[in-house]
Length: 237
Image (cartoon, rainbow, N blue to C red; front, side, top):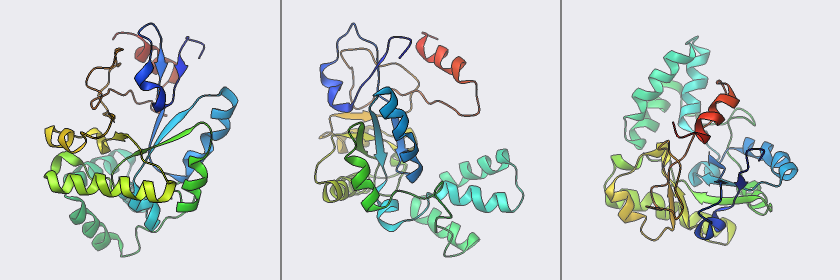
């Protein structure tokens, strides 16, 4: 805000001025701990967009990477080694990944352990979505890394998420964030009815928006100096 940026909601995207500087603040997955940001949104009057992976919410299951982190931490592995193992597992198809984790860590390994690793409940998501500074978007049904799957599998993941969000919230979402940032031409065909799609390509989005299904996004990391990250993002580096 001090640098002259305006925080916007996704509804404002179609009408942005080329002379403006805007931030669309986004959060992925649907963690309950996303609710911790609400006092800040209220204090600074800044909207934010939250992308929901619906099966985790409906079934109240942990996200698979948290299962890996928790269980390997118990075994004494350091963060770097855990990250390497997460990368290996990410190469599996999702049903095989789930089966592998249950085999290694037990059938109940996807049970949340507390407020930090659990998703929102359905009722919490309903309440959360009604907040004046909250918008909700599609993040697939099971967090499939989409470019690993064919057209029908991608469509099922995306359509199922849309249907669940509409059933839970009573409205449709016209914006999607591709899990892990992965997408391909098939994904773009499946998402042709969406107005906007969010990648993790580190870039600004010139106005008027070009390729609205392939919008860039910058990620802020909690273990790196925040000011330097913001300086880099605002620059043309």
